[in-house]
Image (cartoon, rainbow, N blue to C red; front, side, top):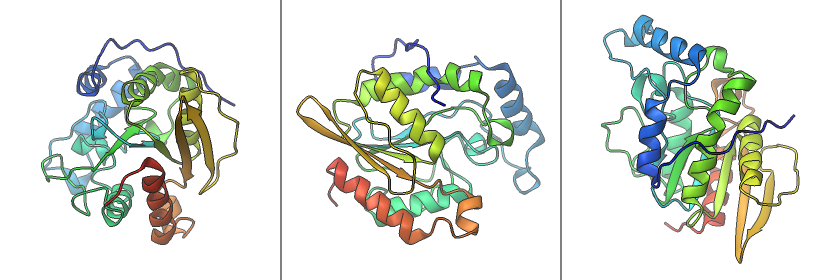
Length: 242
């Protein structure tokens, strides 16, 4: 079932200002309590670290040709480090693949101070706070949706392709673009699924990929070769050259 976000509530006129709004958000009581609780109790391996414990902003270029969309921050990954897909195995897979495709300057992302930079690429999430059991409620999705809508809107002049990591991100991407007035034919999510639509004279591509979660990578549902192939395809569709 599709979920429909509210109209954008952000007044930010730039992507950096939007990120500041995201970080300051306290709209979902359950998520606020959870993300802050995790930041205090911590995981034993990180007990000496100071957790971020706030909504996680998007990361990458402010003039992206490629937008990558995930589900939500990991409790001990992005919720700890403050950068999306950073500090956990999902991030290891994603940034390694982005580097091999020429979209990231280094092959890892472990800290917001590690010098990592993305090339013509930006990573966002449909939900900006780490949810319990990695499952945001329908209401929480609705509440957070305007951030993605406004982000897509602000980045639309340069964005040529969207890469959705997982079925939730796939549906969020399509729904958000429809909200912005684009006519998109429904396509069922699958690894490598593709939708092409027109934005004026510009051709826009949406590509789906299995999420690089441990559940998918440990079982072999998603391999490095599969992820590399779909990211290189997304880079090509976005018009990014090494």
